[in-house]
Amino acid sequence: MSRIPVTVLGATGVVGQKFVRRLVDHPLFEIRHLTASDRNVGKRYAEGCAWHVTEGEPYLGLGDRILQPSTPDAAFSPVVFSALDTAPAREIEPLFAQAGALVFSNAAAFRMDSDVPLLVPEVNAAHLDLVRFQRANRGWSGGIVTNPNCTVTVLTMALAPLQAAFGIEAIHMTSMQAVSGAGYPGVSSLDILGSVIPFIRNEEAKVEEEAPKLLGTFAGACIDPARVGVSAHCNRVPVIEGHTESVSVRLKGDPSPEAVAEVMRAWNPLAGLGLPSAPAVPIHVHDAEDRPQVRKDVGRDGGMSVHVGRIRRCALFGIKFTVLGSNTERGAAGCSVLNAELAIMRDLLAREI
Image 1 (cartoon, rainbow, N blue to C red):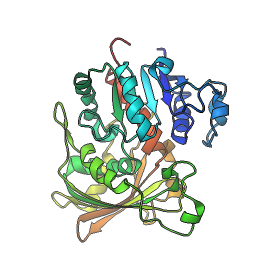
Image 2 (image 1 turned 45 degrees about the vertical axis):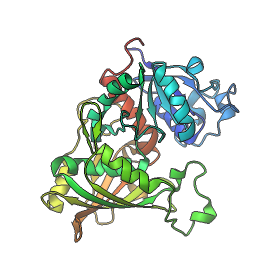
Image 3 (image 1 turned 30 degrees about the vertical axis):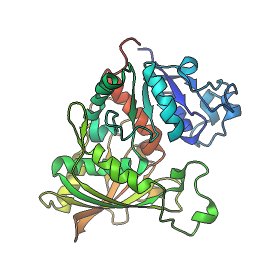
């Protein structure tokens, strides 16, 4: 079977580079176009992009590829991966969707729109069918599918099996987020070394808004958000890669820590689907009292798994634990690529393409 042509919007940034790394040898997709901002359009990829991905050779054999404008007439493909910032994404992504492309976006621009799937395939695969209603609502032959904020992705990977098995009533989360979550070059060393910054703009609001949508129910033409209280505290810490989150959760039925661990270990909703980017084990549950740890765990399974440890009783909520996940892989490009794989399996490409 021939591979599907794809476009990477914003290919020169770090998330764009992560898309390129994941797609260059992908069994389903073939990179057709790389786009850039006006100042780099027309340049070779190697000229318009400072390469920051450490895996593989720089530019991965695409250094001579000419950077295109981020417009459908110049860079159309049936599948588009967007690494654009929020403001340009709001303007550019609908142009590709209207032209018939299925856009998989890492941007926040459309995440909370009622007809746009906010997707983590293990968590809420059924929400992908919202694309069909989006097309009817907006008159598009394509569509937009978003992945969540990286912090929310890690959190809901740990919460989804608990919601399914027990039901969740309330969530309290404190994050310790890597500097890479701020984009390249991240946070100034004079700000972060030897310190913890207890503020990340808009981050807490994203966690509190996006988590109920992700954990909600597909209700035919919309998402019925989960009726859970969410309280988030978000902090930047001097770690390069990986978001660590301390979570307390109130579950229906007051299950034991052992029952919670058993449910997490057994949870693997994508098993057997053959999606190339899906981790074999979505949640690694650790028994050691000092795990998970960024330096020992975050890169496992290409960064697509999350790691849970210290599952124990909480005097206020019932259960508490620590979860760790890759913000630049699972929380960004990797999630979008997995979303696209699921969409292809669900036969959601525009029929005329």
